[in-house]
Image (cartoon, rainbow, N blue to C red; front, side, top):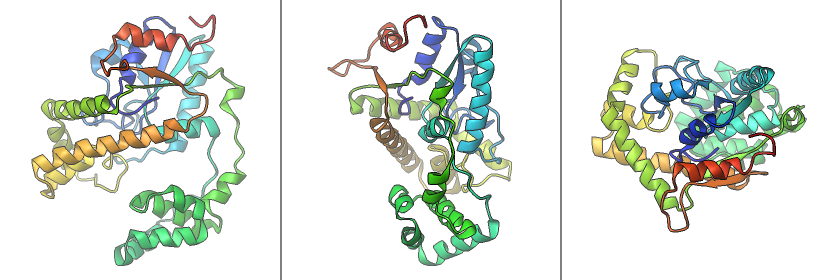
Length: 311
């Protein structure tokens, strides 16, 4: 696990050279076909060296959920384990990890009529009003969901209006099958100690994406005609900002600035998840002076957390 641009893929490839591992991607953007540059998808050379499962498995018009991930990941883990290899889950979609570890509550299916009504209310009175409506019936969810996170707010209120039960109540009723009962888990988080170092890596990577053609990639996606900014795929960090630039809502400089800021905010949210994560082992990619460590040093840190006999 780890924040975006921390070097997770590099460590996974290094581990694949010394351990019998098969990688399972844990990334909500990498699942989509045709979203390669803006998602920092591993290159063809990297994938040839270290294949990743759960990459390029969905069309961007077809949303992929945490429940979908849990089902697919459990199936892949079972297949990998059955042939005597080690499943290595790699990525930064923290909700996916949580779903895998803790299970998911049975939620009612989407109700388009109820969802449309909530969107009309939001258009008329604003998303803070929707947040207040949610807080009146489910204060726990309201405290967890930011007032500007329209998709999650809409879904939480929709669940209550459709089922008569809140997300909090439904999650309390869930029956989970702990992953720890089936696997020996080793949980690693990779990141530099200095936040400024990560910020530099984020900015450099965003500019590299521009050089590689992320604007042209989004132009190609827009040209399909069936994609829009309400889809989870197109709301991914970087894609939204480029889309808005192509819409004329942002200048190129504004797009770059907002793309980098949005990526930093994503990293901050990932750190928030990780800082409260139980049984986590940190792998540092820099020393106390902020200087980046060599690949072997980072690899050796990771290996020391594995159980005796795993190597």
